[in-house]
Image 1 (tube, rainbow over the protein chains, first blue to last red):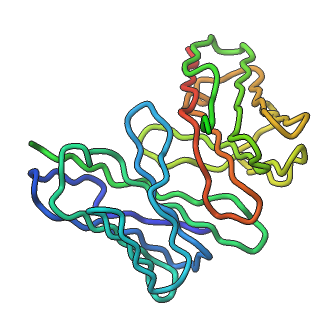
Image 2: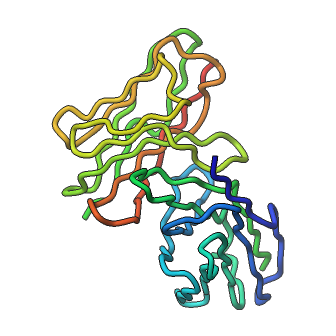
Length: 112
Length: 113
């Protein structure tokens, strides 16, 4: 069974601070996706990373896929209250299975 | 492009009753997925369709659960004889053949009393 562990589980920071959250596994994934989820809503796709070592930027968000495709990180620069939410990583193992394996998420609160 | 829609958004039922949820995927998306999410957890895979064919089912999908996608467009998920442990958010997602990205709907929140 493939598992994704996310850390930290909870993070509360002041507006303007930088932060990094992590997504780790002992398994290799063919791709990894990051989502943000608001309470009572479905996850919204932020980015997909496919190549080991890949770095993608989305405004103030920087996503990195580990060289071995087992881990990923999300870095937010100058966090804003609108960044508040649950950040989920999800891996696709490939090999003919299209289900995503999700971590439990990092709950981020950005205080104005 | 209207995105994935789910109906109803909320459902409260009594233990033992049957419930049915509907998912309309993004048009032209041929893959459709059902996930379940409980409090404090990430979504867990239930089942997946490619067009009208159900190709993969999780062990979480007990005999009381059945999913259909009769014409390869919308899908329904039925839970028979609901139990309190079925209380969760049921999420639907869709994707295009050949692409990794899955796009989620807003979910149906089920509460079993």
